Image (cartoon, rainbow, N blue to C red; front, top):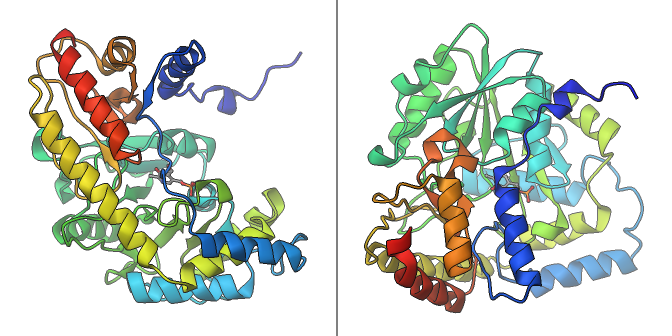
Amino acid sequence: MKQLSQLVSSIPASVTLAVNDKAKALQAAGQDVIALAGGDPDFATPQHVVDAAFRAIQNGATHYPAPMKGIRPLLEAIAHKMSQDNHIHVNPQTDIVVTPGGKWALYLALAAVLNPGEEVLYLEPVWVSYPPMITLAGGVPVPVSLSSDDNFRVTADQIRAKLTPKTKAIMVNSPCNPTGRVLTQAEIDAIVKVAIEADLYVIADEIYEKLVYDGRQHISLAAQPGMAGRTLTANGMSKAYAMTGWRLGWLAGPTPILKIVTRMNSQTVSSAANFTMHAAVAALTGPQDFIVEMRESYRARRDFMVKALNEIEGIECRDIEGAFYLFPRFPHSQKNSLELADALLEKAQIAGTPGIGFGSSGEGHVRFSIATAMSELERAVERLAKIADQL
Ligand SMILES: Cc1ncc(COP(=O)(O)O)c(C=O)c1O
């Protein structure tokens, strides 16, 4: 047989898979594994959203949607939401494409701006999928490594240090998976300054925007002066409305970029599913109190977990500002994060994600998701307290 694609073959297997596979094997063998490795809200999708999907199916929204890039009420609901929540003003007719999940929106953004060999910066620790997505879109991933000692703060000089004549874009995820950081206005200003100086496209991943704590504000890059023409904003229904399985997201940005993005979407996946778009209209235009309740639960879990973890000798856990992941480190341990995740699984039957999966600046950390019932988190803490000295 002829050789398979070198590009696709070059994508490494996810380091998180090994832990997940082991966790599943232990579960299959009857062990009581506490799963803290996922990124899926443990809340049910709100009932009125589910009802809207059923109604849409019954009303025949089971064919290709029209327009394919998103039904009009959804494009309008997204434009309205972005204007209200994010101060980003986009034309629903020309500047938005609805995608099967936020992830595909991010890939479309990369594919639209990159030529082969161009470099894309991202802040590290980074969500596992950014580097492979950049590679698949023909680009070269370049981390801006942030330090846990400085609470993963980013400055203009740290970004500037990674610029080359090939730098084309920067990907920014705030609130951040896995660090839980929410970028401050000073950090946003730093990114804006360098993006304008170096003429970069900016891909802003706002999927966790609704999950910010302690009165913090999520700040949208596309709303900053001088940024509307160079920023693509990816978002979706997964985290804000507990709709991960519906696979619905969107990309919004400058008209000329969205023009080619829409073409690529239609020539690859065609569209997102029709009836899920109707459900998304119900979610975006209906009551929003679900989000407040869900955020409050995450906040209570965060408060419990951060305090409890810091009380355990050998574990250090920073408070998180947004999203639903804790990213503790184990300062006395000689183990790397893969060994730590293994030990947690073997000794305490807790599945966490090894920090190295989020790039080398994630080494020494393990990510725990708090999108898990409080009772599970309490059990996890009890087990951790018993085995922490063996890590
Ligand atoms: C940082 C980040 N961006 C984007 C996504 C994509 O989510 P979805 O494709 O479900 O919309 C996720 C999901 O885990 C994520 O953590």
